[in-house]
Length: 195
Picture (cartoon, rainbow, N blue to C red):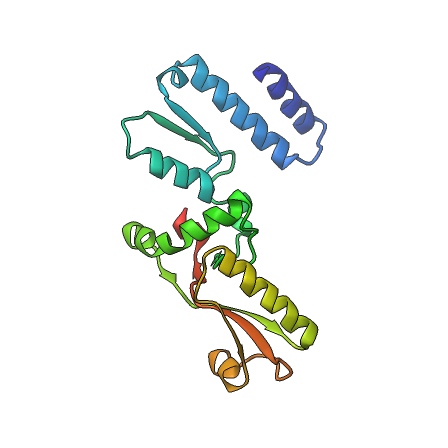
């Protein structure tokens, strides 16, 4: 299989075609994967993690607490270059996650742990809160739904704010803003440094 992939890459290069970056990266990864198998390295691994983004690196960190041989494989030249690269860096409060789903449950459980985790990793993390802004009664209805959903998720510090308090929290808001759902537990982080 590696030979077929190598020949495909060489043929592409020979014909002067532009490199297919994802395809060539995958080929390099597969080639490296088979090299490691040939050398018997995977036979020594208890766990192989594919992907060096926020999730893959977090899994590797957690598993490193145990007596395991762990291999993390990343197809890019550096960590956090795939999906994690597009991450906004927002640590969500959890008001919009469906409380019936695993994602919703994990969002609520993981948010409070970011303070300690970031101290341990020496990564800057700041709880700046978040505002979901509304301009009319229809928006206010949606903000109430989000607040209710957040409360079902166990978030007790959500607040719908209006008037001067709204502009005190964020003076640069559109002057037409009338309401906002305020979630003080939301924060920001650098996904690159966190990885």
